[in-house]
Image (tube, rainbow, N blue to C red):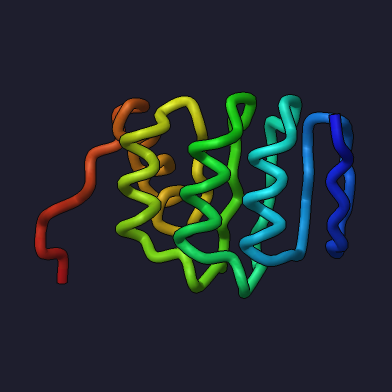
Length: 118
């Protein structure tokens, strides 16, 4: 098996978690060549695109969490599609995290107040 080399601003948390500040091509390489990574936090990576998020979701069989908080080149429509296509992966964006929070609140019995209180 050949080696893959790439230079990133990388914080390794364990053999199953990865936090990075990188580009789409590096994110794609991680997905293609890693069989053990379960958690990738690409939050605040300004150069991650729809293509990178899609490619890592498609190619990494072990991935369970993909943090995309403030990855402004990844649009929410792409994330919505990925959520449906890859239900085993938790995609973290502001919108997705808000949806999960509301869903939990409803499950716990929360009912929004719809009256017009003055």
